[in-house]
Amino acid sequence: MGGGGTAVSRPEVVTGCRQCGGWITVTMLRLGRRRVRYWCQRCRAVVAARQPVPLRPVAQVRAQTDDAGERRDGGQPLDEVMPPAMVRWLASRPGRPVTVDRLDKAQLYQLYRQWDAHLARLGPGGAAGLAAAGEDPPVPDLPAFSAVVGALHEACYDTGRVVDVLAPQADATMRTAVHERAEHARRWLARHRQSQCWIEQQCPPDGPARPDPQQVEAAIATLRAGELPAKAVADAARAAAFGTTGGPSLARLLQFYPAEQVAAALQCYLDTGGRPLREQVLARLTRAPSGPDPVTG
Image (spheres, rainbow, N blue to C red):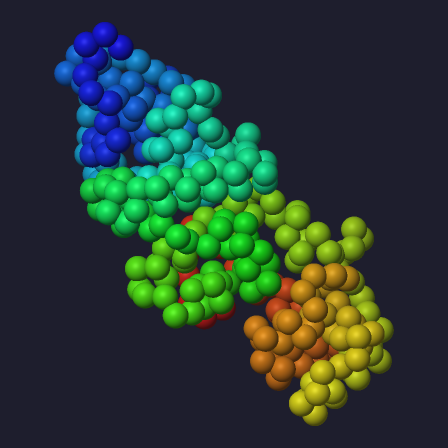
């Protein structure tokens, strides 16, 4: 870059992309007195420009974007599936910039493994230095991204429950970081892998499963008696409540939902054909980033 200045790893200012006009989608790669270099997630441009360029504080751009109620991603944001420090780390590496639409499952898992290894080498003190102003410092030694995804499936996409499962005795800092990772995993599933989530993948092609009503009635009676139904009846109960022919077993689902809630959902299915538990699972999976739980508020 010949006299362009010093590369920045914690930019507190940002410029607008001269190709697409985006601000919140720009990651500064180099900020010097004479030249700047940046990457835009929206249009994928990597731009080198001479100073002066318009600059704004990152916090101001985020606040203005959020206040306006606008999407911050331009379509495919990396910051919905990974923390800002990780996005900057990826942008600083040589090679073609990473974009969400080019990430498959294996690549995303590998990137998270590499990020976790990077944080482990830095340690807590070094990792904290990667945070920009106003950001929580990255936390080393988090559960693997793949483990978080697996826990999400088992917990019906409730990120709070994932924290309780994966970090039950952790301090507040670790629990917050695990929750952030669970939210990133949930958004990745919702935006890019929803068809592979059990609530969709295990739903028959012609619509939600329709089990034998007599087996559903038997499941209601067994649950209200405080017992676990036999496999065939349990499978019918899962099909009635969630519309699926597979996914977590009824025994595992009963670790998440009280038996009476499942029994009430089964009665609703028999009475009206409704599936309130299926609707809850889909709402949790697809809610907006960091939005309230659609069930608990």
